[in-house]
Amino acid sequence: QVQLQESGPGLVKPSQTLSLTCTVSGGSISSGGYYWSWIRQHPGKGLEWIGYIYYSGSTYYNPSLKSRVTISVDTSKNQFSLKLSSVTAADTAVYYCARGRGSSTPPPYYFDYWGQGTLVTVSS
Amino acid sequence: DIQMTQSPSSLSASVGDRVTITCRASQSISSYLNWYQQKPGKAPKLLIYAASSLQSGVPSRFSGSGSGTDFTLTISSLQPEDFATYYCQQSYSTLRDTFGGGTKVEIK
Image (tube, rainbow over all chains, first blue to last red; front, side, top):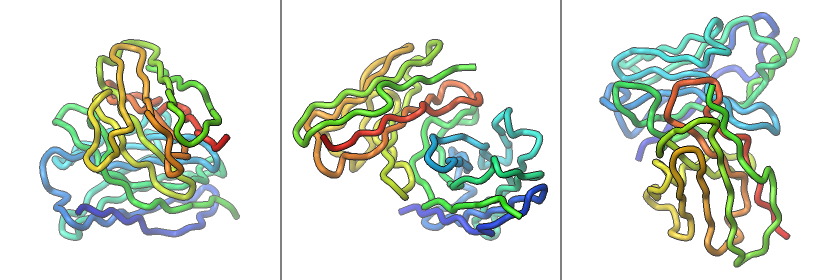
């Protein structure tokens, strides 16, 4: 059974960089056919795709966030990470990591495993 | 950009009711449409993928249909554990608006 777990600071100051890590267990992050993804949810709102990284290392970002987002993978630790720079209060949200299944052509077909989510608040 | 519009945004129903939620895409997305269920404080859970395929472990009272621009999620007999928010998601194109706005199913 694949499990994902987010970790990182719950409070980030405005203009700083939000950094989160997702640890994957029950499966290898290097396995083919998966997109390792970040999705967020503003308080009381809907879901927003942030971006994903294919197992090959190719990255794809939401155009609205692209200039501030970096997603990377650490295969030695079976983890992938999110960095979101120059954060503002509008970046306060629950951040989820998820596994997307798909081919080499994005987007992933669907997201079948999700972490429990972690609330990140941007405030001074 | 492809816009995903769900309706209604909320509904009230009773246990045992048949419930239908609609998702409309602003352009054809073939059958690249998924449905998720989210309960308060929890991560979304995949219910239906490719418009009509039931995810493993999901009760058969959930079903999906549609193709092109119009899709529906049907719960044949609403159970107490089904009260939640439901989201559609297009997987046709990598664009900003992937998810619909959600439909909250509440107890009548």
